[in-house]
Every structure is written in C-alpha cells, then in structure tokens.
Length: 226
Image (cartoon, rainbow, N blue to C red; front, side, top):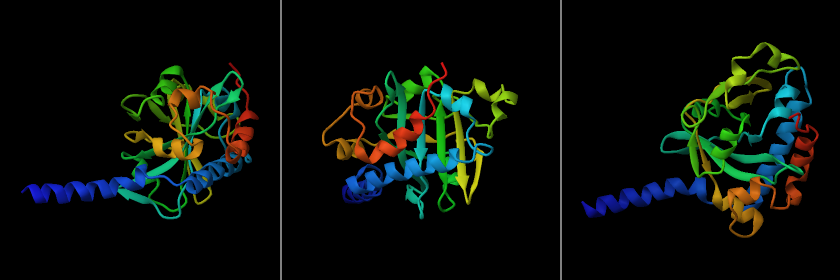
C-alpha cells in the first residue's frame, strides 16, 4: 500500500513539474511573445480591446498561445505574464499559470491567446496571492470588443475582470469563469535572478528586464485615465 502511494505521489509530482519548472530562455520568449500578442490585438482598434477600458484597467494578464496545449491532471493550462499600473507606468512582468474551468476549453485549440483586464483594487490584490479562482474569488465577464463597444455594455463593466480570447485570428470576449490563476515563482526567480515578491514586481520596485521593454512600451502607450 505504502509503495503504491509513493508511486502515485512521484507520478503526480512529475505532472506538476511542467507548471513550476522554469527555463529563463522560455520565460524570455514568453514575455516577448506577450508583447507581440498585445501589439497585434491593439493594432486593429475596431476589433481590439476598447481603449477606454484599457486605460481604466489596474492590471493586465496576457497568456500567449502555445502550438501544443500543455496538460496537467487531464486539464489544459497556459503560462503568461501579469503587469500592473504604478506611479511611473506599467510594472515589470510577473509570471503566472492559468488552468481549469472554461480556460481548458479556450486553449484546447492551437495558438489561442488569452487576455484579462483587472479593473479594480480587489482584482489587483488577487494577483498578490499565490492562487485565486476567477468567478469565485473575483467576478468575471466576457470583455466587449471595438472602439465604442464599452459604451453599450454597462452590465459588463461591473465585473472585476474582463476576459478575451484570440484563436485563428478571431478576437472576442469570452468568460474564463472557473479558471484558476496561480503564481509561477520559478519563472520570476529565473527572470530576476533571485527570489522576489509579487509586491516588489507589481508595485514597480523591480526594473523592467530588457526582454520586456517592448511589452511595457506598448502598455505605456495607453496611460491611465483615472
């Protein structure tokens, strides 16, 4: 019996490793791809995130799509980055993993990108913890798309997180209700060379790494309207 438990435990640990193990080159590539994804989405204003919503957002999470979805305990997950507004602009990126709930269905297709806007302080503080559930710990709604889309979607503006997905060129609001966002501490440590806290990264106390310059410059082109 004990031997069987050990086998299951080792196998489970092996399945967890893809989420927590990190390689700096992969993390650099993820940050750079997040910058490209955001640029491409916002380069088509009539089909992108409404500028007024982006300018009101406290934080943003970008999950670049992968050619082949990863699996953990039978469900899909994706890895990406988060950045929050500071007094001097958008913060350096913090690494996260997202999985479970409807997110598994969203990234079931190849090359699916996901974007989440965190619209208030409560949503922002959720990123400072190690794990939270979208739709449970914070409210979520499919985000409106286009230049003036936000003007006619007052009900959605009550949500703490607005979420989007892009697959095969189609960008649209999509609910990620039930998805779990989890800290990727190994990614942060690989990028910054030592252990860092979420407060240090998202609070603007970490210098923006060179690989994230394009992403942060793109985000800084949409200043806060608050």
